[in-house]
Structures are given as structure tokens and as C-alpha cells.
Image (cartoon, rainbow, N blue to C red; front, side, top):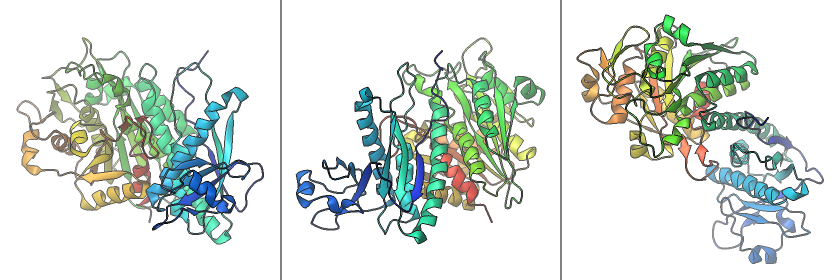
Length: 501
């Protein structure tokens, strides 16, 4: 019987760094855009390409340009790295994997199952350039498709040739780390792309726990609706009450021997489908709500990478998982909900469900786990899409140093964050006349949502990452393909790594 979704996690190409080329493996040559007039600069292996051929294909060397090599030259592809900036190396890797897999798809009648490729890096390419190239190669060909058809052939492995032994060690380490970060991104995409007829709260928590069990030292506990009721997780129970698929709380723990620095808590919104509840969403676009747990997916995937990289920092992760549905048991506007820890919320809009489940988890991380730093990640408000577009995440923080850490971590891994203000002139509006706080205060929606969450963070340094914009893509760009992007997973890993002493 066919499986309901592709096998998770998506298999990515293997990457090997080697001192020399291997016979019989197709070769790709890099080309760089010239600084002024003149032909592009060809990398190692490009000496077999004649000036006449370069002119005949109008080769420019611009980032992401691909050309099939001339017959009989031994060069299968030429790929441009532009001016050699980080994003150019990434674009080159993504373009190369796409052209390879497009060609393989045309050859399926011959029974091709996959292919390898080898690229010799030029002498001025260091660990950073190699890491960006690897990331593009691993993620640029990502696909998630539920179909009866046989899977199309894929790029199977990549061999990076580095003849200089002094450079090879650093590039090998960089490629390994880039592979772990790419795997985290891909798994976050897998989880978010999975359709919600398969992905209910139990499935999400169970799938994450099984993945965690494969990583030494990463522990997982899944709490069911009975445990949640016994312990007073009123926000999570209220949001999940309208569905016959009950909520779950996923708790992942990474506590390596010799861990130093603060104890971090990562909290991710895990709404496996969001109808909006009684405050129902418009039909147009509702199908995209299968990705409304992208924040939780980023947290889960980041924890797997943190364990895989054996980062010496203590981290706890909480993903409150629920389906926000419409039924006779759904929570209502006007309800008063008691959260974990006792604080009450006046519900004004059941479509603002993310902050309800995050509130429970943040209090639990603060009071029970005793975390020193809190970071939550969520597709929380459409306001961030209006403010920042679809490629930049919104960053709110109570601590300047933490905000700087998040932004710097994002810069290192190619994820953009823009700090938004926590405007205290709106803080009084969070108060409710019939409860401690109200769910949707008036004012700028992204800011007031963050101010609501702040009420549940104690006095801990806290950052709220709103990824409503960049969590999904509707077209291909860089190493991103349409669908879930896996945004924030890499930032979280890099953020945790920044705390190692």
C-alpha cells in the first residue's frame, strides 16, 4: 500500500571532500564573472574549454548561470559563481542541482536512478564559500510531492575536490556543518509540507519523538490531553477543543555532559491546521494552513541538528501541538481561558490561537524548566507579512544582547531578521476588564501580539520570532522552492552555538 506521504526525512545528497578527482564521475567547472570587460574566469578544469566555445554560448559567469559543457571535453556542466559573494556560491549550488535533476528527469526512460557530480574548488575558495555552495546543492533540489508516480531520479552525491591539504580540513568541517543545517531546513520543510489529513497533533509529536530517538542524547516526551488537563494547560486545551484530534505537548531535552552557559528554551507554535475556529478564515488561502506549525517544525529540526553537531549548550524545546477547528466544542470569542500557571485570558478572536498555546508553553519553560533564555518561533500574525514581506522574519526582544545574537545568527546562516519595537504605549491595552489579559489588544497587530506573549515570560530574556512571511514561498528563489521554506531552523542552531563558552 502506498505511504500517505513521502518517507521522512527527505534524503539529501551525500557530500564528500577529497584530495583528488574520481574517474567516471561527471565534472562541473565553476566560472566567475570578470571584474571588467572580458571573458569569464574559469575555475580548475576549465582549461579544456576553448574561447570559441565560451563565445558560442555567451558565457558570463553570473551567479546561477548553467551551461552544458561541449561534447568530448570531459566537462558536463559549467556553473557561474558571479562575483564570489556568499549568496552567489549558494545560487550556484542550487542552480547546479536543478539542472542536473532536470536532465535526469528527461532520461528516466533509461532507468536512471540518480547521479553524482564532482567540482574542484578554486584556490581562493575557503570554508565559508564551500558551506554556501553545499547548502545550495543540498536544498536547491528539495521537493515534496504526494503522488502514485515513482520518485524522479535525484543528485545522489557531490565530491568537492580540494587539492590543498591545509584548506581541506577546514572545508571538510564547513561542509559537514552545512550538511547538518541543510538537513534541519529540509526536515522542517518536510514537517510543514505534510498535509493535515496525515499531520494531526499526535502525528507531529510522534514523528518528532521518533526522529529524536535516532540522535544520541536527545530525549523526547509527548504529553497527551489527559496530562494537559491534569496540569492546567488551558490555552492549549481551548484551541484544540474544537477538533476530534486532541492536542499534544512535545518536550525535547538536550543536556550534554559538560554543557556551559545559560539554559535555553525554544518554543515553537505547532498548529497542525488552522481554520480560524469560530472566527473562521476566508476559504482563499486556507489550504496553506497546513504550514501553520512551521515554527514548531523549525524548533524540532533545530534540536535534531543541535544534537547531531553535539553543541555543548543545554537546550529544552517545547512544541504545543493542536488543530484549531470548528465544532460544538470549539472555544468561543468571549471565553475566559485559564493558562498554565493560573493567568487568565479573555478570548476576542479564535483565529489568534497561536498566542494561546505559546502562552502555556512559555510559562512552563519559565517556571518549571527554569530556562535562562526564552525564544519562541511562530507563524503568528499576517501583519509581519505586510510589514516585512515574505523573506524577512520579525524579531521582538526584551533584551538587546539577545536581539543582536539572533540577528547575527541569522546573518551567518542566510536568514534575515528585522527587529520590531515592543512599544510600551500599547502595553496597558493588553489588560482585560474581565480577565488578566485580553488576547487581541487594539493597535498594530504584530506588536500587540508580542506584548501579549511578553506577559507570560517572567523576567527572563525573551525573543519572539514571527515567521508568518518567510515560512512559506510561492516561487523558487535562491535555494528555496515553493512550499514550506524551513525558515528559522538554521538561525536557532546558530543562536544556540553562539552560547558555547
